[in-house]
Image 1 (cartoon, helix red, strand yellow):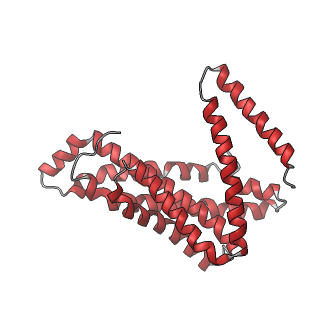
Image 2 (tube, helix red, strand yellow):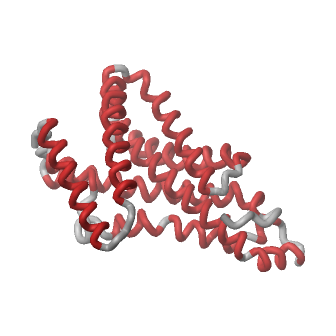
Image 3 (cartoon, helix red, strand yellow):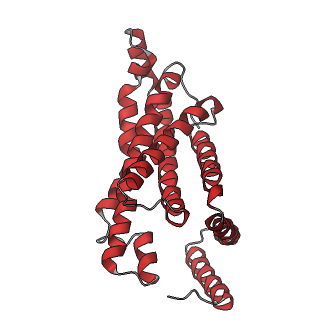
Length: 249
């Protein structure tokens, strides 16, 4: 499938924004400006990133620095979700990196994913993004649950439990909640929705079975990366959260 011309793309995007605007205006929801800004911002970002990725494909040595930038941004995002406690940033960076690295290591070692930049970059970017989401959700939920359930935590501390032990049950709940989106996405693949990579490959002319195989690698890799990331996030920040009641945001 060929990409649309610049004019057709611009017209189509404008009409889609109008459609969204009609929908939100009908319900008197004042988010049209936010939608328009998001479209403009997303368009500029994707065009810029496309240029950067094209350059990396031609200069594979830049792959690792680019991925490090992605991990850094992912860490900042997860840290904001954890209440902007920047002392937790190194631990969240470790959780995100470990989740993504484990999946990429297995997938490349078995040969399921090629080590060339054209394949490795998009695959690694997907699992880094998934690890970030899991760390953000786990840290945010864990922090909120500890803050709202502090009397229970304080009770455990009074009984002699360590800060980590006092918040253990809340941590397990945070991990479970963080894994709901990737597990549901995997369980509903092909029945509830057609995932992005699968659709993209089909539009590019790939055979359906080949598209399904690659999409399966992405989805299962995302679940694995997010499981590691969420579990490590909760493990690494439990001691800090159990020492003093976090402020509710």
